[in-house]
Length: 95
Image 1 (cartoon, one colour):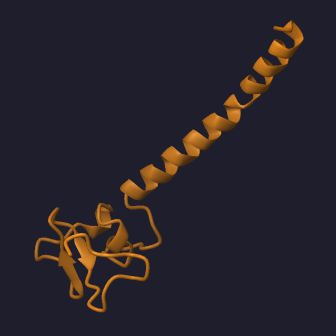
Image 2 (cartoon, one colour):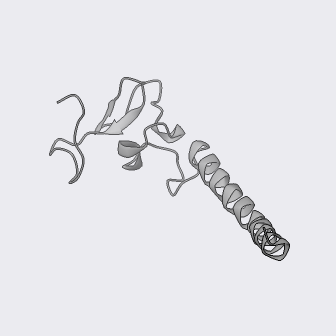
């Protein structure tokens, strides 16, 4: 193998490391924010996000249960009732 070609390839790969580290940190921050309940809903009450992501802390029911218009899933998290069926492109797995 040509040593110049090898060195160029190694240098190119090493130059990608800072970018990969940045992307990893960005992704970890995003996941951490979601799990800590940081969102556009300032009061932490269940909202439409709980339909697709009921593990968010704001989807945890109060001691008196889920708010009006919400139901509780098998994991005791609130999600919005969607009486009209699932949004386009989604389905219920139990059916």
